[in-house]
Image (cartoon, rainbow, N blue to C red; front, side, top):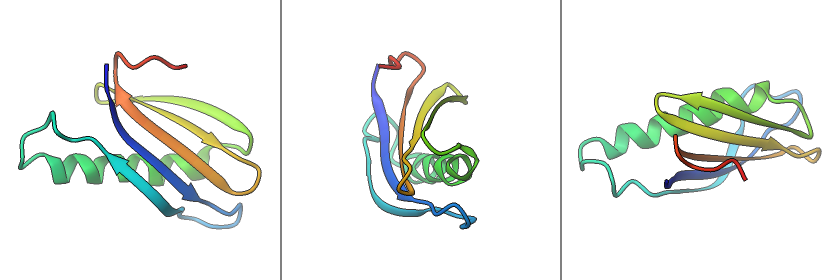
Length: 90
């Protein structure tokens, strides 16, 4: 049970792609050569999922043995937390 990534992004309703404001990654459990690709996979998951989530909506997405928790606020901010499959939803 571990948290892999936490991302905060701004996504206007008319924008296609979100703008990442800050992000944090814990990739110590992956091999050195896998860390960059895992980081890019987390960013890709967030970049594609945020525009599809409705405003004031919480979504849980399972992808390749990890779980992404998304929440999009009414003021065009979105938060994404990506954890392993055992990470609790609360």
